[in-house]
Image (tube, rainbow, N blue to C red; front, side, top):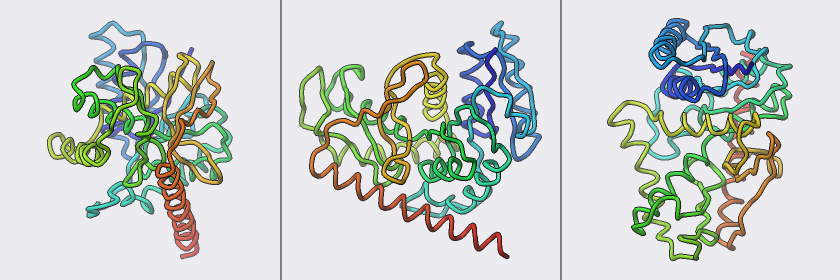
Length: 300
């Protein structure tokens, strides 16, 4: 019996629940949210889906503390805040989401199963949850979605199937994402990569999605379910997740075998190494700013 907990019943939580019911490799989906009404609504909707599709997966609403019985937990809640950033958009929720993630880390302390974090800024939130909870099995979604977008855009640019493109996006899930152009291959061969044009299209896609349907949902939801399958040993393979590296958390390719990860960073050019160092420094500074702010908030 495999149970997956989802904390957050918004756009991504809805997508994750739907994909899990469809995939059928888990038995139970437990849902919690900041607002009980949204959790109730998602559970009811998933129940309908199970009935229509003859799925054996069952959905239940529970409090976060009861999720310690789950095999894995997905964290995708979003605090209420106004995002007026035109750059570093994912960093806008640093403080508001940070306070929420720290609270959940304390509430779930002692849970030893894998935790997949989706809440932005995801690299910082992943580190915060890991350090506040004491868990060593925490990974963040972000670079996997970036990598998928990169491969899709490059494939369209080159006029080839997406499966013909092999390459990674690592570092920050944000403005300092590192496109590993020097190790990218198309049909097994090195190719000239229009990095700036691809970066511009990658940056534009989330805004285009949000303008059309309100929230980015399907891509991160699919990446989350793929990560769950890897960390639980349902499937083996390589996926780009935020994980600890030199004192901070960064997106990097991890090869999972029976649920156990091995870092498999590609060969990096000099510019890519410099960009990765810049991303690490930015995320380190953001984490320290968050911790300092949360400490001040706890005193007031």
